[in-house]
Amino acid sequence: MQTLKLDHDNMDELQILDEEIVACRRCPRLVAWREGVAISPPRRFWGEEYWARPLPGFGDAGARLFIVGLAPAAHGGNRTGRVFTGDRSGDWLFRALWKARFANQPQSVNKDDGLQLSNAYIAAACRCAPPDNKPLPEELANCRPFLLRELRWFFGQEKVRPNKGVLLGLGKIGFDAAFDAARQFGLTEIKTRPKFGHGTEVSLNPNLTLMGTYHPSQQNTFTGRLTEEMLDAIFARIKALVEVP
Image (cartoon, rainbow, N blue to C red):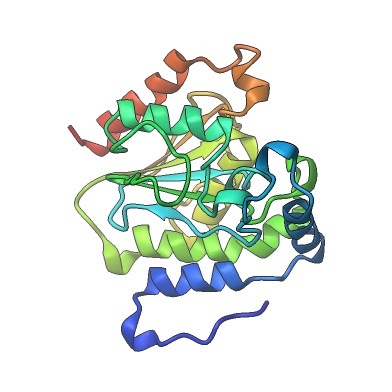
């Protein structure tokens, strides 16, 4: 993995991690794909300059809700440079976050649109856009250290907080990645990975709950497998768990 030379004296741990994620070129297949789609975008995005790099997390550095998605969309986050920004999945996710008062606005169009999250942070199991939205197991493994370091920031023992937290996995891959990282980091004594399902709720420890929801992808939203009411109910439950108004 290539890393940037950083001035650690002027950056906090999360900022340092963001820079390392952006500089990563560990997975040749993903590097080729993310850069290739930027060179030959669909007509509707002609003339736009693509981000075409891995995506760091986005949100409130003091968040109690930590969301783990699958991966950036080729013409969504890979284009705009912010997770779940500029695609239909993001439209659903940020609308739900806004309705639950975790976001200051319902739209996420580009990095300069003024969007801010409160008590919420969004990361991904895979930080680069993968072909067919399907990262390989080894690519997910390459990204896991980033997720572990984010969990250390938000839930590490040196940052114990009186407030409770929630890990929300979007889809099975996000759910499994969240649990596996929490288990590896020592945030739970549960050994067997829980079965994913929409509305699944697992107490990892007295202060941290793992939840699952269907991913807000078009495959799920267009078919009615996931409705706005279903997603709203997930965030209403999360608000109760993390005890925010």
